Image 1 (cartoon, rainbow, N blue to C red):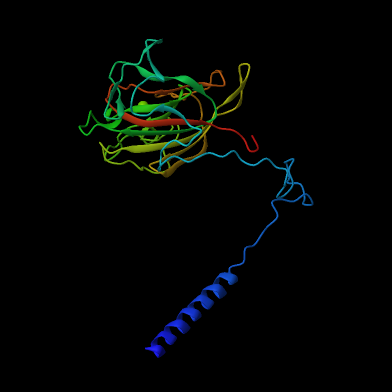
Image 2 (cartoon, rainbow, N blue to C red):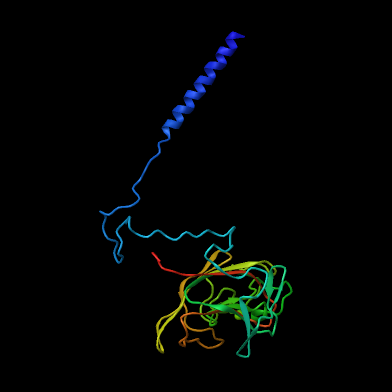
Length: 273
Ligand code: MG
């Protein structure tokens, strides 16, 4: 009995010694939080690892993938259309698209849905779903669209087994650039667009910088900083016409009950802003 307790004591001692030895091997290491004796970065007013460079703002990410981060402007959270109007025959009227079960649905004929708030350079997240029942073929199958600044269309269309012209497919810059790949899900399934948009710049009547767009369709890159040729147009080449630095986001009514949900926007700022 005495021998057994002695063995136990020795075992416990050895285990404790081992744990202490292991913990002492884990050094806590420190590093400078910046430097002042490093070279200037080309084209910047900051040095490499500059200790005086402002730290990036803290943004709390969304609760899950695709959910709005803390600095997002939520335009639709599944409840109501308080952030929107319809535009019909050039007039803004109260929004009349259907809202139910956490999504909104195009009310054919109600007009384009236009955000009350206006945006220039921005990051957009939207989710959409095509009706399960086909509404037609080619451009009549679940046509809608994300109209950046009310003009520059990222096409919404059911392109799952629906042949149509390449620059009119889902996620195309309509009439200009096809998506790099067709990443469409089946009709009825929710699909996402994540869009980074740089607004065009005008000086008086003159375009001094075109718009650029980067788009992910269901997480797949489909446009990579692509220059936009001009406003959305059908069967002709769209051109630019001067407009304000900020314009509404709009969703197209193309006479088909396409659904949308989880729409949010972040205004873009530069580094050190
Ligand atoms: Mg469209």
